[in-house]
Length: 192
Image (tube, rainbow, N blue to C red; front, side, top):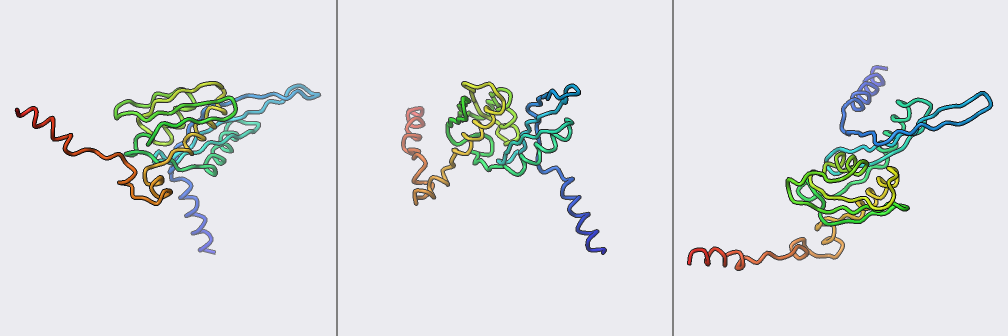
């Protein structure tokens, strides 16, 4: 009996610790006309992430707004993906993502750029933990399509470690070589 209470309490404590941040992107009121009048419902779109490289999105529908948001958050937590980040702040390479009529372009950016993205894409990057990125949404302005296109692009992202592993090489063989003599040449020219 005491063990059951102990286990139950531990599970509740784990749920209360906020390991994931969530952002409500869109809420839509829908109505259904019935014999007695109109019935209203709500659809919510939520993005969830740990701000360390994991992100997911979900949608929920219910008669009340809080219930719709709760359902969307639960779905988002179940559908999380891991995205490799360079230095924990930006993408490794430029990416294009598509879903339906939605197309997004995401580009890596130097430190200090910030998140240059609109609406739903910004929510995905903030929940992902990206600090520097330049992105553009082309085509559909629908938040559902924009988020799906962004997630599609992020799943295509690869780190040098992943590429090296796939090709059976070392990471140093994959990354471009920096010429040490070329770096010394300007210093010698400055001394002369």
